[in-house]
Length: 399
Ligand SMILES: *Cc1c(COP(=O)(O)O)cnc(C)c1O
Image (cartoon, rainbow, N blue to C red):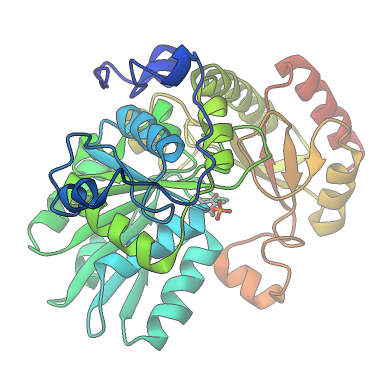
């Protein structure tokens, strides 16, 4: 049923991987199985299912445990990541929360890379703490600090690569080697920024990969979703937890994500190219103090990014000269990029983290986190590179 996931995902696998060969009524596209529950022919049929002996391994019992449209999405992403299995969730945070709650318990310890998604940090710092799960935070990608933070009760290393907004990358092969020395520690990587087109962390020994499918996988800024992939026995733990926590994806949303996925290769290729061109232009621009993009030679993660990623992704962060107000003037002067959180869709989006994601922090806290008030995050869409570039350069004149 599943096409080979190697060579690396491209537009062929993004359209075809995991697609069932036969569909009801021979439709080309996935059907939306809009049902909350499933029926059994008779009690013998039910008993056979309950004993795990149903001839159809894909058969479902109830909507919180599974759905054929959602299953098709899970299989597609499984193929793209080169995983054994996958499970979809109602959002990226639903995927991360369900995964983390499946993997750790009271008295255990989690190591978290900083510069991770803000709500992931909040999950570990605030929510897990309430349930007696300890944690340490280490600088993004700093494997020396990571190894020093591992304790006998550490069970999970939680990371992201590239991170947001600074796009630090974690060397997955080295991370996996360190973690494997410590026995029962598992690695969970949020690969939302990279997409399976640019990087497949499982190939480097990472245990589980999660995505906010809200971003590049769905790719149209119109649906929320999440997916986790990895070894079948771990995915099965997450699937069981999903049935308890109820973090289940709606079949309509699954259909939209499947539809968006078909153009993942095309979109990410364009976004990689545009973002790299924009990053280089900004780096050479007199009104820009500093640019963060993993494929720029000036980025601290440049070597790691070159070695394990085939593209730098669609997000570029930069500091505008002249401080917070100058950056705001630049952001306001953009006509193509809209002011909004999120990234990964066809529309370019721009934001000033000091005013959006980090609004509640005062100047000292911002400084401690290394967030300049003049930092701008641009997430490029699929517009023409030249149009976007001209618009940005024009906006910089207003800074
Ligand atoms: C957006 C995002 C999330 C959260 O995903 P939702 O779908 O909004 O719940 C998690 N991690 C990263 C890196 C993200 O960008």
